Image (cartoon, rainbow, N blue to C red):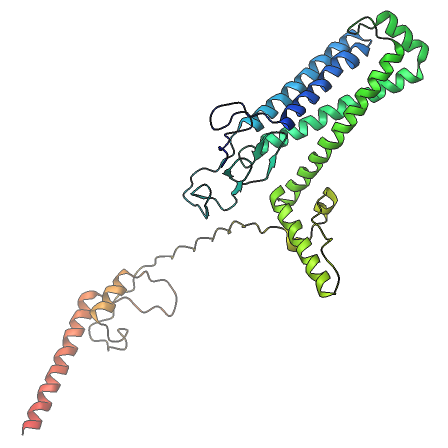
Length: 353
C-alpha cells in the first residue's frame, strides 16, 4: 500500500511530492507570466499606463499563486467525527456521510469532489473554496492577457510603419534583437498558448460554476452519468440491441441538462416547529358547596385523579371540569369506601341468617 500523502507538496514521510502534471502546470503558467512582462508590457507606450498594468498583473499573479498554494497545501483528509455514518475498511475508521476514499492519496476525504492531478491533491470540503478561487482567478488572468496579446498582434499587423518605428526607437524589450517581424511571431505564439490554456481553464471554470448552480460535486455528477449509461445499456438490451458501445460521457452541456431523477438527494433542513401558545391561566372557580351532589362536583374522584387535577392548568374551555380540592376528593373517597364496606357487611349478615 502506498504511503498516505498529506497534501500536494509533502507526502507522509515529509518528502517533496511534486508530480509531472503539477510541475508542467507551474512551468506553463510561469511562461505566461514572463510573456506578459517581456512582450506585452514593453509594448505599452504610455509610461503611467505601463506601470499600472505591471502592478495590476503582479497582484493578479500573487492572488493565483496564493490560491494554488492554499489548494495544494491543505490536507482534505477526513477527520474523526461524532456523527459518522460510514466505515472505511482501508482507513479502518468511521467517516462522514459524504466522505470517499481516494485511491491516489490512499485516504478518505470529507465532501469528496475529485482528485486533481494538476494540484497533486484531492479537492474536498476544506480546500474546495481555494480550488474554486484558483480556477476563477486563473481564468480571468489568462483571458485578460490573451485578449491583450490578440489586440497587440492585430495592431502590429495593421500599423506596419508606426509599429516598426515604435519597436525600433521607443520600445525597450529584453535583448537587442527584437524586430517588428520577430515581435509579431512572438506575440502570435503567446496568444496561441494563451488560447489553449484558456480553453482548458475556462472549461474547468464553467464546469464547476455549473456544479455550484446544480448543488452537486464532481463525484456525484460522475455517479449520475454512470447511472444514465447503465440505464441506457439496459434499455438497449431490452430492445434486442447491443449496448456495449454506450459509455459514460461528461460535459458542461450534459451537466446543464442532467435530469432531476439522477440528481443527488439533498437532506433538507427540517423547518422549525412553531412553539405552541402558552395556556392562559385563569382564576380557579370556587368549589361547589358541600351539599352539592356528586354529579355537580364533577363525578366520583379517586386520589390519583385528584392529584392530576391539582397539577393541571385549566382554561376557559367549556369541557374542562371544575377544579376540586384534594381534601374534598379524599373525604368523598373515604365516605364511598365506608358505604361499600357497610353494604358488604350487611349482605354477609343477611346471608348468615
